[in-house]
Length: 86
Image (cartoon, rainbow, N blue to C red; front, side, top):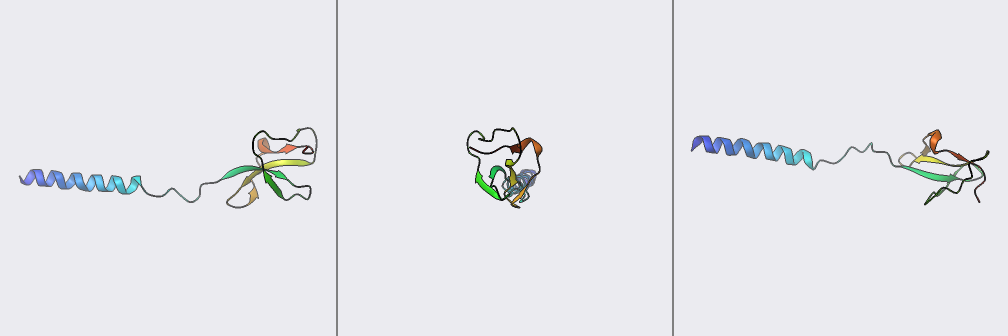
């Protein structure tokens, strides 16, 4: 009987530890990267929804990816589109 109580006690501790770490919040350093159009003055414009409307033919910068946690552009060249937005 003593072995059964000991086994159940260890199992309860193991399950409790697992449950505590399973529901722990995610790190707050997660980045929210979203693509936005760029206004003519260089400021962030409206969020790109659906297909990007930039023609990708010549300057000026039309849209780019921003980190919404910091409000700053990411500098990811694959997400930078050029041209005049229609």
